[in-house]
Each structure stands twice: as C-alpha cells, then as structure tokens.
Length: 545
Ligand code: ARG
Image (cartoon, rainbow, N blue to C red; front, side):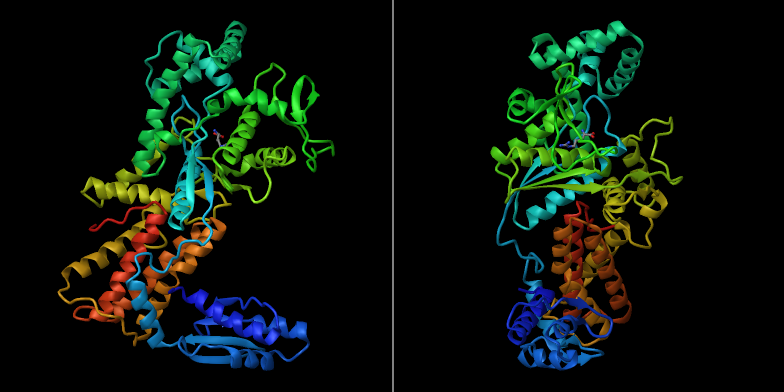
C-alpha cells in the first residue's frame, strides 16, 4: 500500500487510540509548515481537560513513524507536524512505480451501482442541457468501475407520452425522417398542437393508441426511436462516453409496469388526478405536496416511470446504490419519488438513491446557453466549434478531437459541480491555467522525454526539494481519487492533476533529467498518473501533440 495519507492516518490513529483509550480521528492534512499536520490533540485535550501540547507529545511517544518521517514535532498550541523522510519517499515511489493502479486500491466492499445519466429526449437533437449529465455520468461510471464496483449504466431516455402522440400524428405515416427533420417536425407538431384543437385531440388519441400497443402507431414510434438512438449513439461515440445501445432504458420500458406500480401505492384522488402525498413535503401554503402518478386524462407521466424505474433497479437489477445525474431543477421531483418509494417499502437501507445534481451551462452573458437562432444550443455544434478551434494548433484530426472534446469535458468537470459555469472556448482551450490542454501537453512532453532517453529508469532517490515536492504530489494521487469518489466532485481530481503538472514543471526546470535514471522514474510516474487521471475523467492523453 503506497497511499501516504492513509499510512500516516493509520499510524497516528493507533497512537491516539492508545492515549485516549478509544477511537480518535487524527485528521491528518497537508500543511505548509511540514508535509502533513494533525490538529486532533487540540480537540481531544479539551475533552480530557488536559494540556494539548503535553497530550500531543504523549501521542508521539506511542506513534510508530520512524520508517516514514524524518522530522516529527509538536508545534504551536499542540499541532503534530510530520515531515516525510527523503528515504521513505524514494521507497514509497519505488513501490508505486511497480503498481499498475498507482496506489489506488479497489474497495473492500464492491457494490452494484446504477448510474442514471444522459437521458436525452428522443426525436430531438441532443442539446447542451444533456451535456453535463452525460459528461459527469461517464466520469462517475469510470471512477466507480476503477474502484471495483459493478456499475450498471441506465440511459433514461424521454421516449414516451404526449410529445410522441403529437409527433406520430405529424409524421402522417412517413417513417423515414432523419434526426434533423424529426426536430423540425417536432416543432411543427408542437405549433399545430397549440393552435389546432382537432390535431390536439388526434394526438391525444395517438398517445392512448401508443400506450395500448396499437401496431400501426408503434411502427411509426419505433422508426422515430431508431433514428433517435442512432443519433445519440453517434454523439456518445464522438464524446467518447461509455453509453451503448444496451444501456437505453427509456421511459417506455416501464409501460407494462405502471398499472401495478400505482396499485401498490397509497394514492388519493386530487382533481381527478391520482396522487401520492409523501410525508414531510409541503407547498408554499403549508399544504401537502402531491406527486402526480396518473393524470386526470388517465395517462401516466414522468413520476410514474421514475417510480417504476426505481423499483426495477432495486428489485431486478439488485442495485444497492442508485445515482441520478440530473440538473438541480429536478431536485424536488426526485426527492418526492424517493420519499414515495421509501413509504412504499421499496427503497430501504442498505439501498440508497442519491441525486447527483449540477448547475447549468451559461453563455458569456450569464444567460442560459442558446444557439445562434435563439433555440437551445445543439451539442453537436458546440463540439464542432471546440474541435475546430483545437485544429488551429493541431494538424492531426485525431489529436484535435482529443484536445477539443477533452476541453469541453474538462471545463465541466473541473468546475464545482453544484454551480453554474460559463462556457468559454478561449479559456477552456488555453495552454495556460487549469485546462485539459495544459495537462495533455504536459503528458505528451514527458512521453517525448522518455522516448528520447537511452537511460533505463532507476529506483527513485529523492534529494532535491523539487524532487521532493513532485514525489509528494505523486503519492497523493490515491487520496485525490478517494476524495473524488467520496464526493463525486471531479474538480478534486482535476485540481490534483493540475497541481501535479505544476510540480512537474518546477522539477523539470530545476533538475536535469537526461542521463538520470531516478529522475526518469519520476517522469514516468508523472506521465502515468496524468494519463490515468485524465482517463478517469474520460479524457484522452495523446502520445504526441
Ligand atoms: N429526460 C429527462 C430530461 O430531459 C432526464 C431524465 C433523467 N432521469 C430520470 N430518471 N428522470 O429532463
């Protein structure tokens, strides 16, 4: 095990436990003063009504740290400062370089995790609204798989209900429309639906026919779905996300379940609609808040399919953790669905359902991102622009695609997930600053150093302070991955990779690498860490740039 933070944590925890006669979290942290610091003696001393400095010294008497630390001291009011020994750094790095996983162990208790992500609406082109769900979801899948979990991807496509009645009616028997025409037809159908009562009525009939399994209606609906799926799959391939045909589990999947779902719930009638009123939810006036499972016209909506999907994931897929990658505006919807499932007894520990929420993508003017004609910005256009801009600096189309798509993904993942962010092509493709291009460039530069050196890599010997700083960053990779997994906030990992690259740059500027086998090992470890880290974000690391 090469995870330095866990090692220090474990050693200090044992010492604290011996002194306190019970478990104490040593709260080991990176520090400016030494390499690591624990402030746990301060809190414990207050609790035991004793002097914190004396307590810290006593903990150190019980601590077995000699093989890891050079300097160990009590500082200030009772902090424990730990400075890693150069010799220990070399030894740990040597272990790391033999480890394909770069010190990141798999979890002891793997789970079956459902990740619900992307979920675009059929018959429309994928737009920027589904970008974050797709990108973050893909990173979640990659990370959890890397940690040894069994991950089931679920693409909860919007493929059912009123919009499809409208569309099938508008198609008027023609089943050969491509995705762009479908988008156009959809807009026309919407307009007609609002203006023409006869069309509206026929569309409603169509929904009923569709949900009842009428063959002629289903044939047209299937044609629309086939076109849509092809379009989505081509976008996923372009984005390099893992979603495949087998992962489509749209709302329509649950059609046959819906009657049974509603029957098993404690529902009440509200203005003709069938509703659940989960406990603890109130509207603005303090009245109970409904989750509408069946509309007054008898049709099932978004809530019913989400309930059916949740039950399926628990009972059939046997998931113990279910993650929903959906924007913040749907938080209440999900909370109501989860509460309903809890009250129905379907959702109970150890099974957890979690909303992994995120903010919106904004245009530079701070408004929601729009296309040139004022409509919703198409994802394909956005990717085209990023790749075109990347192509200005890279003749090779494969590289400009890795750079352009990587930049879009990294700009998303390196931002605080919960917050909105502004889509800024200049910034995301800049060679300076916290960008994927910077990391990809650092990686390819190291790869070229390694290619051109005749020297064989040697076990690392740490002497210089720049080597030291780089060594510690390399050893912190497992902790960064752990923190990212705990929070599913990828800016932790992105920030770590950025810090690692900065440490590498300082090292490379100050330490002569050529002809030095120990330093080549540091180079190799840096390149591998960057590639693995970018890989967890779903971003490619080209060999040459
Ligand atoms: N189709 C939905 C939308 O565009 C997203 C689906 C999210 N997943 C879910 N289980 N509700 O808003």
